[in-house]
Amino acid sequence: MSEPDHHCPGCGRLTPYFARYPWYFCQACLATVTDGEGRALEFTQEGPGGGFAFRRKGEEDWRDAGAVACMIKGRPVIVGEARFGGILAEPLHSGPFEYRPHNLVDLRC
Image (cartoon, rainbow, N blue to C red; front, side, top):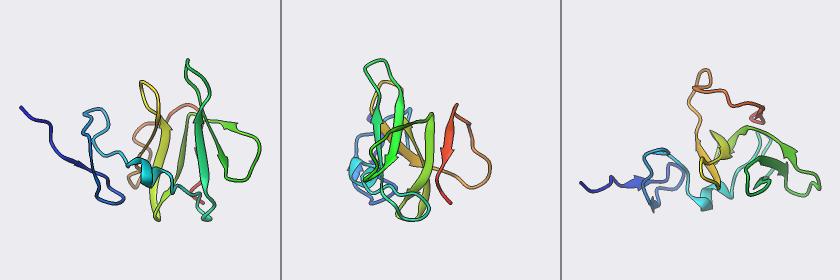
């Protein structure tokens, strides 16, 4: 059985399918993440053992977080650390969070 196609929900680019993350944004769209006021954000993993942090571009200090609710092209997303490493953005559905990661930072407004 072949894997289904996956198209980035931000730009439509065909990307590899991952069953764990069926609606993730491509890296090009991830690079456009902003807070609710349109300020660009950056994300990093804190080390080989995990950990996730963010900052607004131009700021010096990183801030620890479990995940960040923010925006891609005006659309609400949640950005966090993927299970086996890497930074991942997925659409954030309207209504309450489907899961609430520890230390969620909401930058949508």
